[in-house]
Image (cartoon, rainbow, N blue to C red; front, side, top):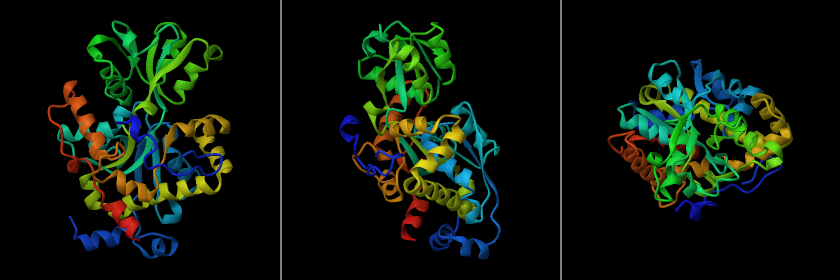
Length: 349
């Protein structure tokens, strides 16, 4: 399924950076507040803190932060960086964050456990940025049986490994799990302690570029299952009811950042590089391993369809895997995991 949907919903390449509670009327009016004049006339908006990790897919948010694009919308947004993405949903639940960017499988897991955190907007689709890397002496996924594999449990790496193993009739019970954070995986592999690891960029490149690429290679990645790993902007439903204008402004900042990346690719690469602590050339390379959806694409992502980029389709697969792994005891309905009202309102603007 995912291999056949790899090119669905892509943007055409643009520049060097890109490859690819209230009544409905009242809510819509709040969602559509935007622009400098509107921001000046509107009541002061409350600041919002959004949890993130360092990942190329969040580039539009990094650009918005670097250029102060939220301030132009009359909004203060703080990006709080986490080393472990699994810590973001609990922080939202504890009100330590207003919202966060997590993978959609995390949303399903949280909703299944009774949390009311829902996706309001897709942020990016991984297209090779998440990967299983192995020593060149390990020929395939089938050869993982009985071997030690390093990955961050209850994370996108865990989920990608489970899906890859299932394609060969295996499960995580067939490997020896070594739980470690994404940034610890290259350290362990380059030190010779582990031959197989699952992580994401820039850590994938740290491993595969070692010794001129002669020691390790990618054996499976999100490119092989496009649509399966997607990051989404999430908020608790209480925040959605209380702060619709603020959430809309957060989303508009993403769209402003994405537009800037299209129009000023070289400058955007410099800003993203500074945020991530890498070279602009590396930003241009890494951005090819993901796709940031445009606003029209978001509507399709949040709607029911047979496409793997529809969360209804990928979510059904994710739910089955998580339940089979014992991570959830029920597969939540699609409608419990997403809220498309913000995207719909922005499209109607």
